[in-house]
Length: 216
Image (cartoon, rainbow, N blue to C red; front, side):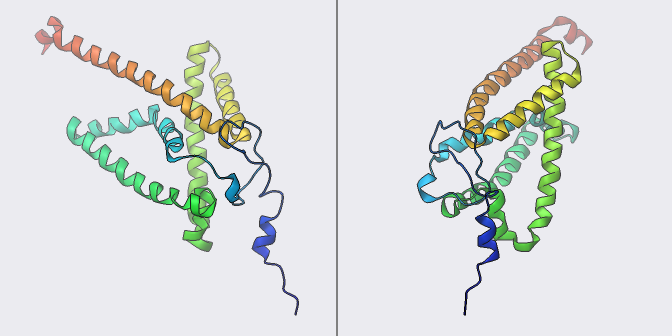
């Protein structure tokens, strides 16, 4: 009796799923590897490298808007801060646990999720797909608006530039994403530190201004 090849194994051998992958840190060549598991001898990196990949995307204006919801709901500063800390920790736990699957399976979290969901993976996949569209839309809107103000260009030009840069990073893949996020972590921390200092200076000025006290 002749053993028939497994359909799943045959599919993973297709060029669509395999391809070139980074050989090590700093390998900036275009990545063509798909969702096929990474071989043992091609796995590298450390938990510290993941820090900037997750940290930089959270340092954006959407986080500021989310924080402002504490005031909208009347929680006040300290209770609102506590709610955000608890929410961040609870939201991080599943991601932290799922990230431990990578070294064992050689796959990213999206393809590895099939092991947890099986055939029902289509449901979270659709949610993730819609979430990605919304995320890219927000990045294009906020980034396009910022560039149009900074470069004195029409709004649509700024949006095109932002989306084009996103596409370039996606084409190059893993190593370029790590490099960009490491740089953006430093840039965004400095940016938000300056923003926070300016906001605090405005608050202090408003408190010390005699006209403010008289109006109060």
